[in-house]
Image 1 (cartoon, rainbow over the protein chains, first blue to last red):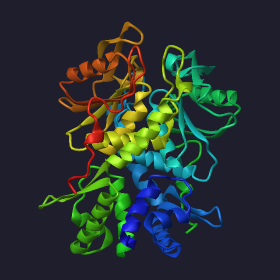
Image 2 (cartoon, rainbow over the protein chains, first blue to last red):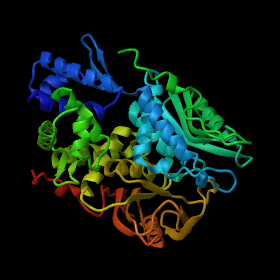
Image 3 (cartoon, one colour):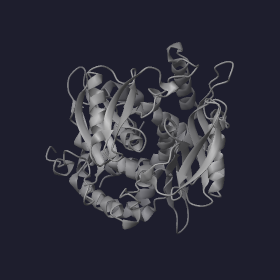
Length: 257
Length: 257
């Protein structure tokens, strides 16, 4: 196979498997090429991603080494997209009765989810994360988008017991938007013990739901690797913050290149 | 920019935007290259995807022309993956009380979702589809995975009215697993009138939920472009069918190349 064809296939292969270490001999065998040629291919790939600021190709040296594609969006991409997104979210026609904001179109748009997922994954690219967690229903799309770019599983806490999930662990939490005590649960087999969990949700008002998810992680002896919500509303005025608590905008510089 | 770098960037760019027509002048400008060079690049890309049976690069001629990347998995990929998936699904430890099957690990695994999404999108690659629809909760991950590869929005019908969605249209349906009449609803602004809708769900027992979704589409004057479930259970024996009613395995041959 020619270099040009190898580059197309290699780009596709790596993009489909983010954060996964691929050994050089794998590519050498796949293309019937010398390891030195593969190394040259990977150098081209690495350089192209870096100069576009839209990904990192990490080389791991040694016998157990190889390459790993890290989805990583540079500051310029983040700024352009987030400015566009916040303009769309600030549209007054989204405001529903009760001060809620209609977001289902954005959370059902696969191009938005790709961008948001990749931006959040950029922020947590070098954190150790075993799973992404959310609570039904609207956070699921976001959790899936983030999990895809981190290549970890995502789990969904549910507000009602379901016979199709088997044994569950449940916690009570105070839902600030409904001002009452609610319950959320997770199947016992959904999360392994002592997992490092990134919590993702679409909207935060008082933070009760996020606290509930944190409690749930503790019940599995896990630790919180981060908490990330797309939008946050103040009680008196509308305020939108993307990816809290960390602000990835300042961190996605490509100084490492 | 050199050809090798253009190929890497072009592959990534097209993969991120399936089913989207990209005009040749766009690439010519992006890379500062002649249109004839871009055409040669695209021919390499097309050939590589075709020989691996993992995608189609469609060329559209004329003034409004360009190229379009169609996610399309060949028969050999489908067979390998589906045989692996069905082995995993048939594992007796998945059977829960009541004859339900635990699927949340597969529906929370981003690599499985990528494969299933791409296989379903392959089957519907040349159908006209405006939106993918599912009902909460477990079908959401699948609907999102399919929508991503078809590059259409996905909408989620909900079983309970939510204040965060605004005005809704609701239908009643008979849930065969619970043997009672239930209600599902969709925000009025979620689906445009006369949309062609692909219905996706994780599990089908009696089909009541699917019928409910079909009713909901009709309320929006829409038409059903297809109905697709990951697993189907018979009432007396467990039977697993992937992607009903069509069987995409026989159709994903690459005769067109």
